[in-house]
Image (cartoon, rainbow, N blue to C red; front, top):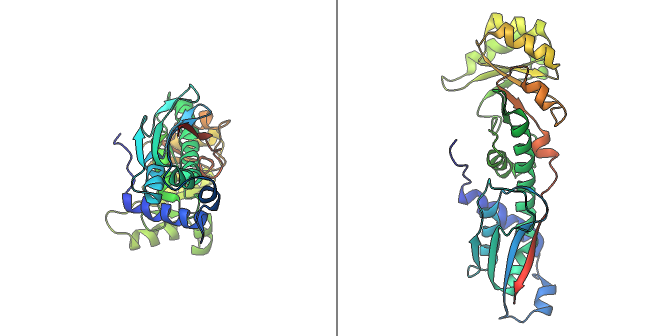
Length: 285
């Protein structure tokens, strides 16, 4: 698997907006009031719970945007898993005011992204004995989709579509409005360019029969039991990719994977992952 990558321009835009929200109009008035302007500090960033790290480059961008002279030393890499708490993952040194001004915004990004990577890594570990790959959904935090999908990759998962414009996914409401499975598939095929894939969501094996008659690139088993999915995989017999989705969590992911599907998509990875508690501790002033 290629190393995950976040474009610097995406990082810069999000970090700027986050800092503007936090710093406001007058700046960090507490740090301005309590810390001499030229005081220097050095600190370490470290997880306080076991987990998978993600977002170091974003955290660095936060400190650098507050003060370009702040030094950020990487002691780990995104995707590294830690079982020992308080193992330093970065060392930051420079102007004390700047460091404290940037602290919370940097920690918000890296803690959130590391939480997603940690939960993803857990799902990947639970399903590694199968062929199923763990993927995300579009159930992401507005304006943070690229960051959250990057975190999925750092946790060992893969990405589903990034938006409404990069793949066809015919859902139940499309089928209802369009008038049926056949009509929806035919409409998408007429609209699709040669590089676009067509996936359709079903919730019964009867619907799968209709899909097999018309043809698609992939089928999504929505809220179906592992037993139903296993039967669906047999019916498809390799003619299209299979995806399982709908309420996938730590209690169900193993059984779903063992049904033989190709990919398992879980919105919980991005909308319900607990943050990984990461702290910033002054090492010396």
